[in-house]
Image (cartoon, rainbow, N blue to C red):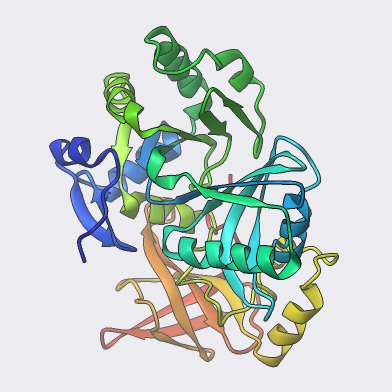
Length: 357
């Protein structure tokens, strides 16, 4: 099957990106050095092409009721975003997502590319089974999606948007954007900007018509904000204690007994079902900091009994770090052993996030 490409592919190719396959997409792995890109975001600013992620519009009189059925958070507040989980009627976690509420009848769901079809199927099934008045529209292929992230992202993004409005690329929303708080958003004339991200740093995520992708790329790169790839994003998200669905969390895993538990509200309709399932097959998702190399690989077995779910080298800590799922309770400071490529490595259970702000 041919790999899908984002609206920025030809520009990334010209920028000498090293590409990789990710969930059926041909995406930039890095533009020369993942470590340098991650450090640039930590101390300054960079941007990521995240157009592979799903953007769904969910509208209708029963849209709120739909999310009360399937989403672990109560979407009570307009113009806010909520991180949480989509859950099936069997109590399985189908995806981790961010839902933005425009009003009681209008929502935007940002979903993982590898899970988008499953998410849509879940929503359609619930709409049909409950007779909900809800219209579901996938706008992913009509739009580009960019994450501008970094320690200096607020001041530089405001200047960037102002410049784009002068060039008639974007509407002039810089004044509104200046007052947008974390997990809030603005939408105007087909442009969506939220103060969210997947790096542990401040930042904004922006989508707009894919026809504007060339002008956006030219302006943001000329402005001096560098493109960054998936490898840097993986470093940043793991340092920040953020999970990747498909590795750190699957349909067979529980979000309980981990730092994810706080994103499942007790009044969620399927809470008790999720809890019952978790108690029958308990695993403990924890962070581990390793003393030395090599970097552990996914599925490497640990002692205490468990397995690695994802790992990177942290340039901040100057050590490998991992998420691991343990079969027994472990606490901060406990020693951990892993055998990777026939070499023994030792580490300890860490608090999360690994990198404190």
